[in-house]
Amino acid sequence: MKITILDPVMCCSTGVCGTDIDDNLIQTAANTKWLKSFGHDVHRHSISNDLAAFKNYPDALNKLKKEGTNSLPYILINDQLVMSGTYPTKSEWESFLGSEFIQNSDSISSGVANNCCSGNKCC
Figure: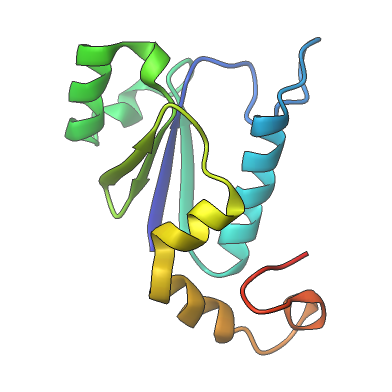
């Protein structure tokens, strides 16, 4: 599954730079890593350093022109805008990905994931 996160202006995607640490960015960085561990194709693009990538998503670009940068971040799954204005929680990611997420998480047969997972949720 292709997952794209279009971020607002920020100095880094982890949230640990500068004087104001953003817990939502820290959790999003962790969720991105978690989603990649299940084989999902996850990409993040910040408007501050990768504006050209936004042109690949016409719906998102139209929304940005209409609503402005305060409507960011945008969450896209298979190039379809599914959420804007905030970052999804882990349970929201599971809801968005539905049965495909469950199939991918069940297919992991070795490694840390099997040792620490309970159902669909990894530690």
